[in-house]
Length: 106
Image (cartoon, rainbow, N blue to C red):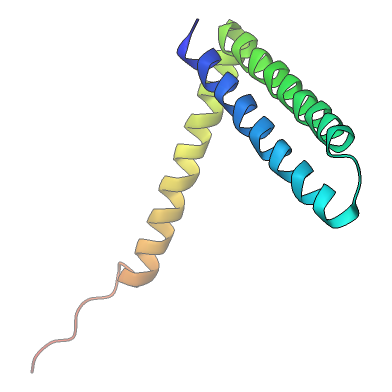
């Protein structure tokens, strides 16, 4: 099993544990059957895990797609350019206009 698959299984396990704890607290407050509540919460958590799994598979498929990789490369290049020009704009604001000469000491 891959490390990423193990990681997503860990996510599912953690959410299941949280769901069980939530079911216990819900039962304490509302007097409902803990098994019924736990079952409903586990269903929701399982569906969240399934959706996350589908999203991860879609990301994996996208990364394997040459055209998508090219789009992603261009997106990161655009992001880098935007960050660079923003930093340059900020730096020029702090430097002031470039054509000004410093004041003469006399």
